[in-house]
Every structure is written in structure tokens, then in C-alpha cells.
Length: 268
Image 1 (cartoon, rainbow, N blue to C red):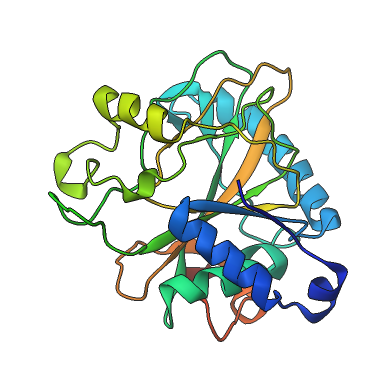
Image 2 (image 1 turned 90 degrees about the horizontal axis):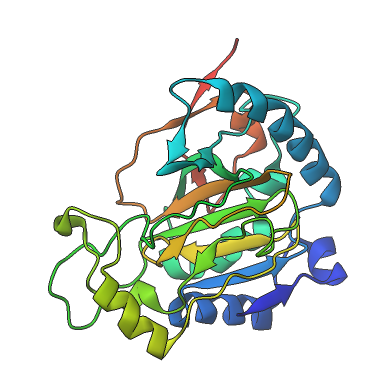
């Protein structure tokens, strides 16, 4: 696993070094994921974490609770209004620099949500969030979307860090046309011999970047405390997506020359 430790000099300049940028984009191309450690200030993480925990109780009580596959994995949107909107999260300079090298001009953020691993023994099936764009490929196409995950607590195998299957973003078997985002058992057996799955430990304040085609799975959280994580998706300019909602104060706050927010803004 490639983990890039953001340096004090990079924080001061809000700019990745050339070596760190190249190492991150290379890891995204080769492995399908990379971690930028220390990319988000911990004081901002603490504010988002407090709000996330406050929202969990009401979400799990809903009869139509937003669960993914089972009640152990909760779809949880961050609060889309002040004081919970931070440029360091929604327009993080380090994430933008690393992904712009792959997605190019016109890229945009098309998603602002998250998932919380609730205390549970359940796991998700191995799947890709979005599959390959074309079927029957010999050599898969370049990336068109990069997921930007921001864990709000330290994530580990104990509390349900995401299982990741390195290199599977290059596997042509899960496609948009197949009708399923789940990986077949035969494909999983083959990949276990090539690059076994890992369940990394990732510190709060880090950013996990991963190709939308990369196979992964939500895992059991064997602690008594939920494990919340924010999720965004940076897309190439031509990919279609539905806008998400943000408070009007975010429009000016999040303006960036390289990243557009595909958001509608509300005043209330």
C-alpha cells in the first residue's frame, strides 16, 4: 500500500511535492488506490466526527434506514450546511493535485455522502462501485472516477476498515453492462493468487483515494463504536451525475480552478 505522509512544507504551501504527486498517481494507476496521511486538519475532522455521531442514532431508527446490503453498513450524508462545510475536505488541495493528473481539466466532484460501519458481524460482498465502461476488454481503459474517502476516526480491521483488492480496477469482468457490481467467486479466487485483499489501518485526517472500479467490501465492525467515513467522487468532465445539495455559503468557499462542485445551493 502506498501511503504518502503530507509534510509540513506541503501543508504550508498547500502543494504536493512533485515526487509525492507522481507516487500517488502511479499508485492509483498500478494498485487502484493510495493514502494521503495527514491531509485534513484534525480540528476539522473533530467537528465533522461530532456531528456524524450525533446523526447516527436518528438514522438507524428509521424504518427506511439508508443501509447498503445490511444494517451493518449505513449510508450517511455529512451535514451540508455551516459550520460543517470545509474547503480542506470538499476541495482538498492534495486530493485535487493527485487526481487532476489522471482526470484532467474539467474534472468535478459529483458526490458528497459517506458510509458508517456500525457494530456488526456482517460484511458486504466484494464489489466495484462502478464497473468498466465497456465489456470484453483486453486492456482496460483509463480511470474516469476517483473516490475520495475521509475517515473521521482511525480505521482498522477491528472497527471495519474497508477491504481492498489491489489491482482489480484493471479486471475487465465487472462492467456497467453486466447488471451486477459484485465480483464473481471465480474472479475472486484468481485475484487471491495475484494480489490478496488487504484491510488497511488508516488514520483519521488521511484521505484514501481509490479508483471507482476497484473491488472492495465493507467489513464487520467488532467494536462498540461506529466508524464513520466521508465519501466524494471526482469525475472526468464528461461523466454524467446528479447534483448534490450544499448550503449557499459553500458556493464561494469551494471555488477552485481545477475542481467544480456539481451542487445545487440552498439558502434555508
